[in-house]
Image (cartoon, rainbow, N blue to C red; front, side):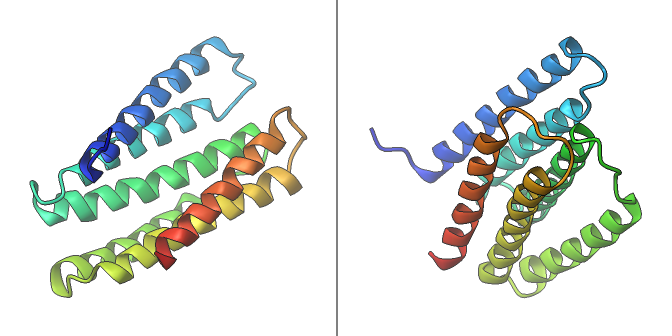
Amino acid sequence: MIFDLRTVIVMSAISCLLMAIVLFGSSKVYPRSIEGLKHWGWGALGFGVANLLFSLRGLAPDWLSIIVANMIFVVSYIVWWRGMCLLRGLALSPLRLWYMALAAVLLFLLYFTLVQPIIAPRLFLISGIGFAFYSGMVWLVSRRGQRLRGDYVFISLMVFGCLFTLVRVVA
């Protein structure tokens, strides 16, 4: 069975949306002392919505299927990062810094979507953000906070994410 790219993206969106349901449900069942699960749920929901918008490429306007989708994707990375900090008992960085970074990403995406519609800079930026997120998560989990069960599995998945983002840029 061969799937086209749009089908694969929709399947990814459904997976993310199902993960969001699991994480939101888990946040209700686990003790309040285990923080970060709701953040992960919101992040997974964001990734799911972003993937649904990506799947509309060519059917919906570029501002929606490229700019809004990528911005939701980047916000989801930030929400997941903050969730991991909460889980590990670490202080959260000020939101002002994240807002400034998001504004810069938005301006970049606007320019390379509406003014100079070139995919390479957008791909490089979003993949670079993904690489920074995954490598930052490896650092955060391996070097900061208390040691938790499953850390090595999580680190392995984040290393895979790093490799995947590098392949996206090279390919």
